[in-house]
Length: 251
Image (tube, rainbow, N blue to C red; front, side):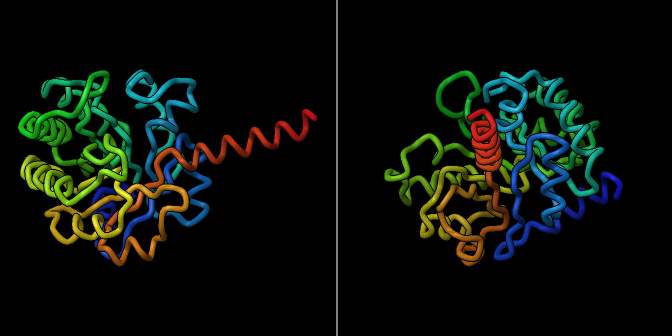
């Protein structure tokens, strides 16, 4: 498939109640392994990519490294690829438009784009993040599916998650949709009742991060989730397996 066909296919598999499952990868080899396992699309995880290349998460990995890695993944598999783009490697709209154009050139068809302030505290206010999303959309000329991430839940302890936070996230969802976002990513949210409330009221299809032993795909589907991500956990598990295997032969 050519890039535009992959983008259209990627859009089509965001179906509330029949979620796309993204078992996050970190390089071309892991992408091929996940596709061999049945994946119809692949997504990088920023922490996994950074860790695999010896860096910390949080845009410590140089942008050119992230883009080169994305190009290798796109060349290795014939399914849509989406890039965890963190905060877009820029704070201001001009920089975001420029970086989005570079992302399109790698052949990927989507990005995760978060509203937390990389290297700072808290999250961007809604108006600022709308400008940032609009700049990303403009810079990519519509070629990228923007998975608009809000870190409202990720930055709070799970036991504090409540309907007031759901309302705050939904206000952002409305704004992010107006700015050009295509789906809403709410990592950190694990309570099924709150997830259902988000899904029932969000103007955008909802992406949930699956934590180990959190729930099942079927339960999330029943809540109306359209996309399930596995974040850094596949990489963590893979590296743990390598350590165990190495320890066995070193003994």
